[in-house]
Structures are given as structure tokens and as C-alpha cells.
Amino acid sequence: MKKIFILTAIIFISLQPLALAEINSVSLEVKGLSCPFCALGLEKQLKKVKAVEKADVHLKKGRTDLTLKPGQPFELKTIQRAVKEAGFTLEDIYVEISGVIEEDKAGMLVLVSTGDNERFLLFDEGHKENESKEFLKAEVKDQLLSAKQAKKMVVVNGVIHEHANLPFGLMVEQVKIEE
Image: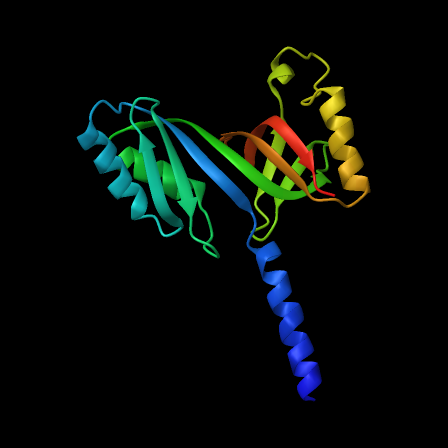
């Protein structure tokens, strides 16, 4: 009985990092930062967010890198609200997200983040110019479909976009297939 308990505990502990590895990194592009006091105000507001452990505000770049607390759910709406309450405009949210690829009913590829199962509709810059309703370049789509078929984890870097009545969109900048 003791061996079963220990084995169960080891399996449970070994699975924990995977369950918490949803959004790996977050960097915010913020407009309106003009002085060190602005940076301090934004940092204080972001640190109030439950999922944020640390906020590094880069005044000259207009960018803020967030360190997330392990095991805390990350809510994008909360970050957006914190930036607005600090008196600034959030332009873009750059992220690195680990997850698996799924296809929705319309055939669009979706990244489902590990741990929290947040869904992100995937597209790239070329989708605006493409009249065939393809949202990803063929090369990227093939890479993602291959990962889906092989049931491999992917890491996607990109910019989050919000859409009404849809999951967040993620403009794909880089894809890495986990081995």
C-alpha cells in the first residue's frame, strides 16, 4: 500500500510542471509612458494582478515584460484593465504559449494552451491579403497540422488580438514543435 501511495505521489508531482505551462512569457507594448513616475505607476498597477509576480517596465521602449506566478491562472482581460487603470493604452500583447493544435468546426487551426485550455485562433500577417479565406500561410499550416497529427506540443510566439464573440486571435510570428 505504501509503495502505491509513493508511486502515485511521484506521478502526480512529475505531471505538475506540464499542467502549469500555459503562457510562457508576456510582453506588453504600452503607449503613453513618458517619465519614470509613469513607469512606476504602471508597475504598481500590474503587480496588483494576481497572476503577475514581477513587471519590468522599459520606459524608452514602451514595453513591459511580465513574470507570471507559477500555478496562477492568467487572465488577459485583467492585464488590459490594469494598464487602462494606470492611465495608459495597451497596444499589443506579445506572448509565447505552449499547447496543442486543434481544428474548429470551420476548419480553422486553434492553439489550446496547456493547463488552462485557453483557445487561440491562429492566423498570420498574410491573411489580410489572401482572398481564399486561408488564415495561415501553407508552410505554417502544414507545420501545425503535422504537429496535430503527431500529437506533439507546440510553442507559438505571436501577438494576441481580441475579437468580439470569438476566442482570442493569435497572430503567429514563430512556431516550434516540441520533440
